[in-house]
Image 1 (tube, rainbow, N blue to C red):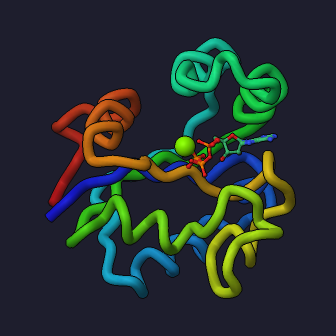
Image 2 (spheres, rainbow, N blue to C red; image 1 turned 180 degrees about the horizontal axis):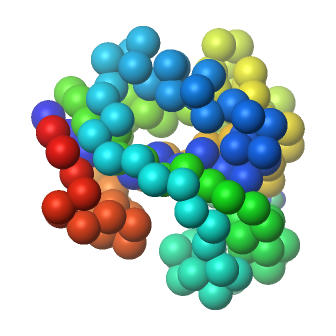
Length: 138
Ligand code: ATP
Ligand code: MG
């Protein structure tokens, strides 16, 4: 049983796609074991995405991530980290496989509907950014 952090990004939340995206996770056998809706400040987004601070898109991307509500969630299940990355598809929706969340719901490489942790180690750090252990119910 692994845990991974998932974010439904402002573009998808504003288009009312939370339920449609959540059903992709559930149909694939992942469980939503914690979930909350919140809005990041720009400085909180900059902290969460600190690893990307040298990249050209960092400024505009952090502005976008704080432009409206997001849904943060912990997904649990077998191989949850990799399984979620497969469900999400490639970063750029135009390159993502048909049937993936980003291909079906993403608008652009920046407005690509979802975030998912890329390793078990990063998942633990990212889950701790949004949730306390008390909020995660398996
Ligand atoms: P995520 O970390 O959100 O799960 P990822 O691991 O597929 O996505 P990263 O390379 O970690 O992609 O980039 C983080 C996020 O930054 C992407 O999801 C995307 O929203 C945004 N991003 C990546 N590349 C670009 C770009 N060239 N222009 C604008 N935004 C970008
Ligand atoms: Mg990433």
